[in-house]
Amino acid sequence: MGRTPPHPDVSQFDLQQVLEALVDPVRRSIVTQLDAAGADLACGTFDIAVSKSTATHHFKVLREAGLIRQYYVGTSRMNALRRAEMDEAFPGLLDALTRPRVPVAP
Amino acid sequence: MGRTPPHPDVSQFDLQQVLEALVDPVRRSIVTQLDAAGADLACGTFDIAVSKSTATHHFKVLREAGLIRQYYVGTSRMNALRRAEMDEAFPGLLDALTRPRVPVAP
DNA sequence: ATCGAAGTTTGACGACGGTCGTACTTCTGT
DNA sequence: ACAGAAGTACGACCGTCGTCAAACTTCGAT
View 1 (cartoon, each protein chain N blue to C red):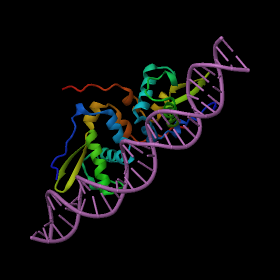
View 2 (cartoon, protein in one colour):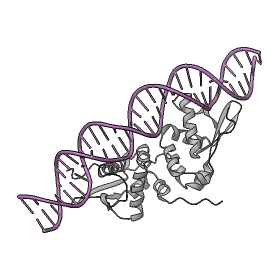
View 3 (cartoon, protein in one colour):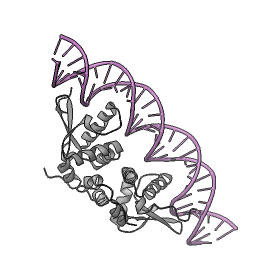
View 4 (cartoon, rainbow over the protein chains, first blue to last red):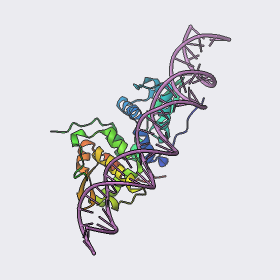
């Protein structure tokens, strides 16, 4: 199977594409889990309630938007959050989306 | 016609809803134009390439997400960006989305 | 009182995106 | 060599969303 899938360069990151990737709750959850873990995670280790084929689809969307980098380790596909590159392209965006909601004072 | 449409309170702002509002290019353009103007603008003064009925729909989505506040002045409906409240609920989000894309060094 | 300007409402249409099941591929371990 | 684990690819289905036109409402100006 595809050894290494195509990854966009930082200069090719597109805000519209990134937002379309992040607007889906499942995908945003993947990003959040990656961010919280602070480490690369295999596709199968995520806590998401969708089938494997759907999961594959979501990871592909995230990868093509530049949010994650994927590489194989055995039969497992590892996923790494491209934090630094996203911060370079869209400063503050990931921070704003991964930060837990601050309760508003009454 | 509806005197004053319903506006959500800051405590009711929902990230999912805000993202769904901002993912549409036309709506994000409206927010960007409001931010750049630094003033309230009537619906008709925006530079958007859609019909009036579609525009009405977009303004409604933005209002219900809490991104804008709407009020009538004569027959014109004015739109105000709820900057401070959005910043309180989701710090850095609007900044990240209204800031023009920083060119990446080669 | 009438007309036009500015939006709203409703209904319809079409495209896109999330979902799944099934079949397939690749690698690991035995 | 084989079986199983981990994903991927391919269709198909279906709901949602953006879009528009047409009819209507409200307000201001003439």
